[in-house]
Amino acid sequence: IHEYTKAGTHTVTLTAIKKGEPPKTSTTTITITVRPGQLDHVKIEPDVVTVDVAKELKFTGTALDRFDNPIPNLSYAFRSDEKAGKVDNEGKFTAGAKVGSYENSVIVEVAQGSATKTATARVTVKPGPLDRVIIEPGEAIVEVTKEQKFNATALDRFGNPIPGHSYTFRSDAQVGRVD
Image (cartoon, rainbow, N blue to C red; front, side, top):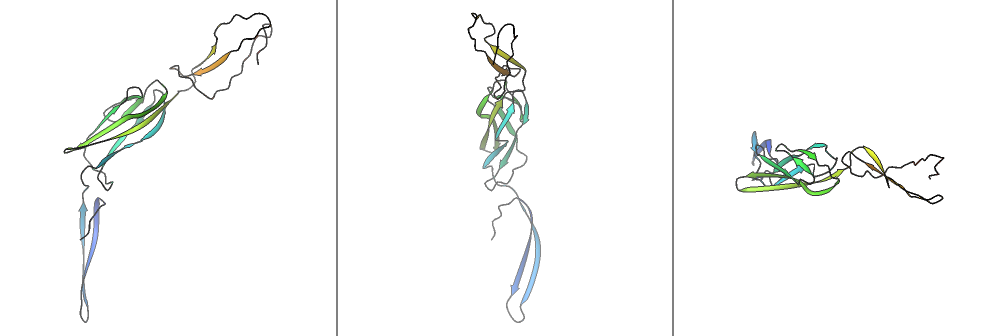
């Protein structure tokens, strides 16, 4: 007796030996097809991902039996946390416009008979490319010989701050100096 845990087609060679003088052997080869078992869990790929705002990404689901054999011909339902973005019925995800890390942001669900299983993915939405730089304050009134501090922030097209930029400030020499 042999328990098969790997789905697929397997070739098995059986040999029978009859004891005696001289011993007799007989060998035969058979093909065994092992089908996947019942739905045990589902896997989502990718399960952790970082994506730019408004960019698209494809998610896939795989239904598996208890031995991790894929189960074919099942239907998958995708849904998403609207804060992270939107996913369609085929798993195509479009990231939202707000930067952040979203747990359980994409969910895939599969059912087989009375068994229903889900898997979730974590999506981190990062800022898109540089769209503009703002300087704050946007307007200042300064007394002669006094100082005014200015801050610059890089933004993507959705107004998300983009960290890690360096800034060079310049001013008209007739007005004053800036470091």
